[in-house]
Image 1 (tube, rainbow, N blue to C red):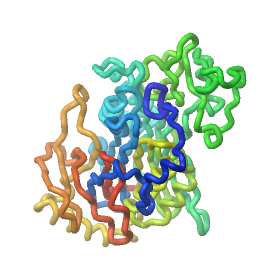
Image 2 (image 1 turned 90 degrees about the vertical axis):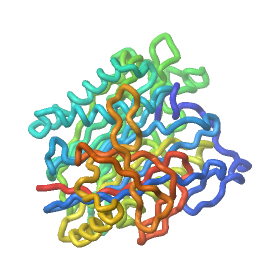
Image 3 (image 1 turned 45 degrees about the vertical axis):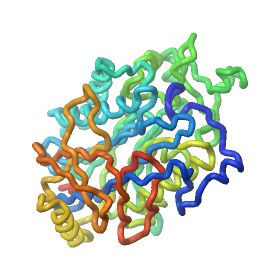
Image 4 (image 1 turned 90 degrees about the horizontal axis):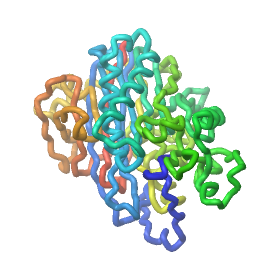
Length: 455
């Protein structure tokens, strides 16, 4: 939800009926014509596996800010497999930056968190301890970096797959959800819980650290500041409770934990993650979702899971969910948030092995003989920022049937790493469903990956 100096606390008025006349109907997407672009990438990566595999799609959607047309996408994500050269360990993360330097913060954390986690020798024997250490170390490094994180930072929602276990570490108000089969329907099970002042435990914790908890209307004198109940996020999301120092009008964060935000850290906004764990059962858990709050602002976890369950191809699910979220943002506001979503389908090899071989051949042909096993195990959507590490090789992979992409591949020093940067072009939809050809943003990315999990 951001901070008062960032993307989500600016109180834009809802669009009037007159404004809606400027909105073009683009199927599932209702986007202002002046900001409809189509910059998406579509990648296929196959890694052979034994017992089940993850078919993963990721989409990031630049927000629409009419009052800040040059504002960059502050979301970033990271997908890395073969952590510590172990074919059984994979990492997924979404990072939602906020504040003046939110993009730099999210990219710094995206890079360093997985590096520190990967280098921890205790990772496999005690993932919870390793997660806590990595978050705190990353937070300290960000404080000491050249990035000014006084009033900037990032949330972080991450999933670490170790064999048949999922470990989820969360800082902030992004979310991870897993689907659970319940007879003839799927049910959403939250793997994380939004850390906001709406939660009584988090609200009391930050108050003990010296925070004032007030909504913007209360701070401005429009509502009684002594009333310390705010309903829930669904009913009061337009004016949520925020955190303020005792004698100042900052930082105004609508979350109670983050990485960075050194000023807010003094009033309890900490980088200590909440970690949960669940055992994967491919016949019981069809897929999991990792997404920024741009998805969940107007969509419940159950709605997201039900929408994703309608599609066998996670790319189609990502497009549909992002499109519905984008539409709801424009129906309720005159702008949208940045949107990033990862969907990973959990499939047993008995149901997917043949298809995997077909995809592998397709990828080899597209990449001029490059073996699919030498293609990415790490994918991120932004180039490294100055001071955050060495830039990685760039790769633009041509999807089947598309002539809009150019393919450039550099020699990779690490067979499990590649950086995918945005490039212009329109990704062909999967043959199963005709997806919208536009996403309404200048930094859109739609990618597909196949990963193994060895039990």
